[in-house]
Image (cartoon, rainbow, N blue to C red; front, side):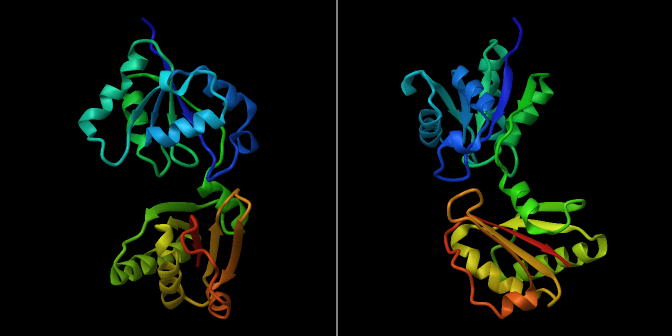
Length: 236
């Protein structure tokens, strides 16, 4: 029996109707699938309902893959693919397998020779980079930085030094309720001429993407971005 195909299905970055940000072919493919892997089944069902999936939600097979999934259990999620069924991998927001536990499933699929097809959709990382005005020729994404203040400062100094040496844009994220603390650390740690972009609520109605030097940020009132998903970008 031939194996199925693993489709990587992007989802909106927030409470936006899928048809506003996803191409029609992506929605069409999503509606054709009966097997999915997602971080959380509840939010996956909400997305599939909003996307107009024709099957009753209780008839759609959804397996969970998140930070609690053991590496030894990932291979079992490929069972429908081995049986010849196509499977959709869904993230909580944006593109699956990028800063996302779905990468483990894709790695296993590649190892077993399963066809993997990425579908077009929003990526907060790339959208932030596009709008930042910082270098899109050389960049690196670092995920979350250390939560402890002294460790965070040390890491930021390292990223700034790498950026200055390589002319490389550094991208990272923070738990939204710690956005203010991250900004305060950036303003007290980085050089005045280093450029910093804050990209908040990307693709949503409240979207705000602003790039200024550290010295200019220090003269402004702190933005209202508490508990709002934000990508941080800097270029020394």
